[in-house]
Length: 216
Image (cartoon, rainbow, N blue to C red):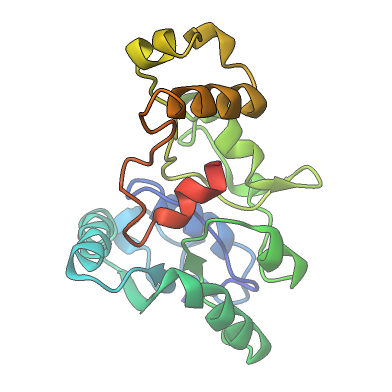
């Protein structure tokens, strides 16, 4: 069976899981990939730290597992479902106990790299993973010291939407908003007209509200 020496971290899509992990398995002492003549012959047990405990989040994981099982019937996936806030804590415990996961979903590689938990993926990247199809910035945050530690699966883009009528009444144009200082000035000017100068789309509620504050 394939066993990675270190946790092999990926922000991954369904089509990348097996190919990327099997490349990592070539380093292991015991592997069935060298003699495998096709994807049907490859056998592996993969343990994945998966952030998400709701039924909807688990369904995404199940769909991924179904895709892998269809293309690689000899690969068995074991999920460990956790909240995002518990991922790094669980990773640290598993690494210290010598029971590292093989794959994981992760938002920031900084701490896992610092604890020596992640293995650089550069040697496993091949023609099946075309960097040109990804947003450049998503690759940059997955790298440290010229090493790539994760593959982006998705990116959430935040942007500001301006009410031009309110801006006009406050004496501003959209092109005037070039810095955070400009945005604050415009917001205060709009507020002086009796309207709210700045608002969040979700009303300041919900599990991902922190992201709005991070942007601000």
